[in-house]
Image (cartoon, rainbow, N blue to C red; front, side):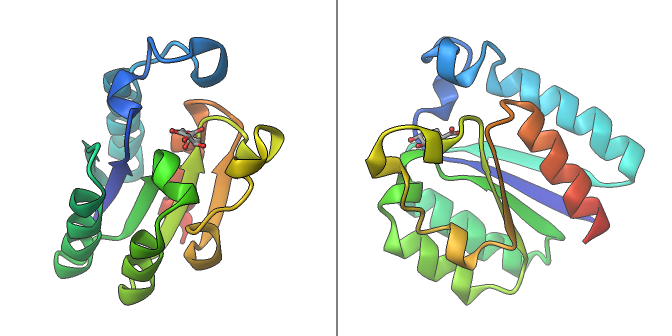
Length: 142
Ligand code: DQA
């Protein structure tokens, strides 16, 4: 069983991007740890990143077509803007776990609205890179 781990805009810059908010781990560091944990759980992870909204939508459709077990989604700033991602999650039956490194509720008011949260199975936010591993553990138990 495969868990898709989809990452949105600016997350390719993890490690150097506002490290006081997002930590110093790169997306490759996160991917490496997820792969180790996935192996222990008997899962495979397929981690991807794009700065383009349409790619994320295509990958959600692909998760459904390929019968992925779960999608872990950090949609970055599209979280707060994208009706199209909201609709794509609604259109598939694969459960989606929303992840954020930071705690958007504790930041600027424009980050308080999530278009993902109402259609996600659940949300993990504020635990930095650890959040991805918590989400993978949750995925294994769903
Ligand atoms: C983020 C939070 C978003 O508000 C922000 O736009 C990001 C990263 C996080 O992981 O904390 O790009 O999704």
